[in-house]
Length: 269
Image (cartoon, rainbow, N blue to C red; front, side, top):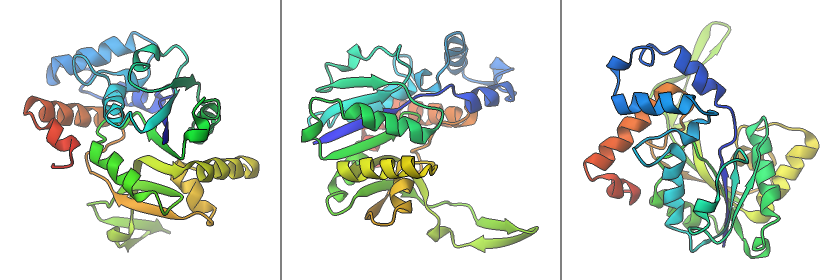
C-alpha cells in the first residue's frame, strides 16, 4: 500500500515576480481572456499558484489530484503539505484518509514535515511505499504512476526524468565545455520510495544539516540506497513562473478541447 505526500506550500514568490515583469499581463488584450481573469482573480486572494485555475472548474492542483484518484485503491493515506486553511474535506470521499500539515521555507523541510505527518496515519504500518509529488506539476499521467509502482520493487527510490533537447555546456573561466546531453537527466516528480528508505534518508539529511533540491537527491547522496530512473514526459512541466503557466494552460486546454486528454493520461501521446 502507498502513502502519498502532495507538496503545495509556499508564497509563489518567483511566480509573482515573473508576473510583474511580464508584458502580457500588463496588456490583457494580448492573451486569452479566461486566462487573464484566472490570474487576476487569484491575485485578489492569498496567492498560491497551485490554486490558480487551468480550466473553469479545475485548478493546477486539481489535475494532479484527479490522476492520483485513479489509483485510490492503492493509496491508504494522503498528506497535503499546504496552507492549513485548505479545505481537505472535499478529498475525504476520494481517499481513505486525508491529513494536512504546513510546510517549511525549503522544499526539503516541507517533505520532511509531510513524512512526519504521515507517521500519524492510522494506516502507517500498512504503508510500504511513499509517493512524493509537487502539485505544481499538473500534467502527470496514469502511465507515469503505474510505471513508478511497477519499477520500485527492487529499489529504494524511483524517479521520472527526461533528457534535455538543447545542447548543454558548462562554463568555466569564460570557456565553454560541452556535455553529452544523453548523460544529463532532468528530474521530475512524482517520485516513489520504500517507506523506511525515504524516512531514514531524511533523518540523515536533517542530522547532518545537508540541503537537497528534491527527495531522490537525498537517497543519491547517501550512496547505500538503490535508485531507479524511468523516462517521464516532456509535458510534465513544473509551473515556476508565469511563462510555465501559459504553456501548461494552453497544453491542457488543447488536449481537453480536442478530446485527447484521456489518451495523454494513458500514455498514448
